[in-house]
Picture (cartoon, one colour):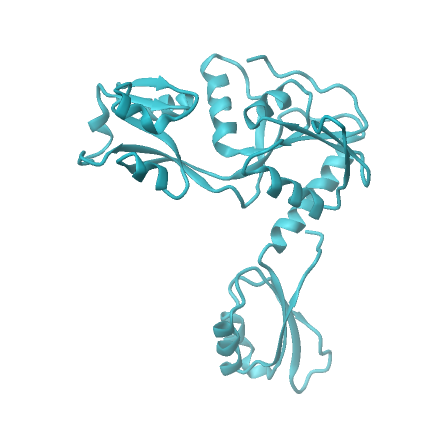
Length: 304
């Protein structure tokens, strides 16, 4: 694990994403929604940006933090679990921070959890004293154990963590949990969450002093717009002025509305961006409160 390297002067951004895996397709879809397009190399490891000078590197997810630290890439789409694990490992050996989480991306959600055999009764962290815990996230686990004041052995495994108790190499495990089906199949049950994880945009802790500064700002602004519009709808309706206070109380997740009627009398036309689900039930509640001519429109793009 190397120290952070000052980024070389470049006029193109580089973003590292998974070549394959559960974050690969959503990451490409998000970047495409930001207006990026690419031409893929023959070896399918590099994508040259065509619409903007923003290139992709297609790599293993556990390589992404290191590529940012080494200045090879400017950003990376990676799980918070992997980013935090490598950041914790750097801290434990005395290296300074080299990357940081810049945006939570809203996909790839999972939890890093302790899981014990089904026959155990969970009574809290003190129960772990003197046990052996198998994990692929030794730095995060070690930090958590220290915070709990627990002395336990961390057994580092690169895969198939869930079978460690059956093999006798560990008493329990610390692993990523999505649905819990894998734990159930191995007679384990989750008992404690160490980290809520999802895909994040990671970036360098260092600042640029070249054209990448403006490119990065533009990309982040577009990404903020895309993320804000996820599950968002534009709601339009008319209403009498006297009903407005009650109607606005039914829109707690909406941006401040825009009033489209300029005169001071009669019904008002409004539009508001809603960032939650606009269900039939919700529309009916608005109608009962006085909204008329309700329309729900999809929003394709917005600059945050």
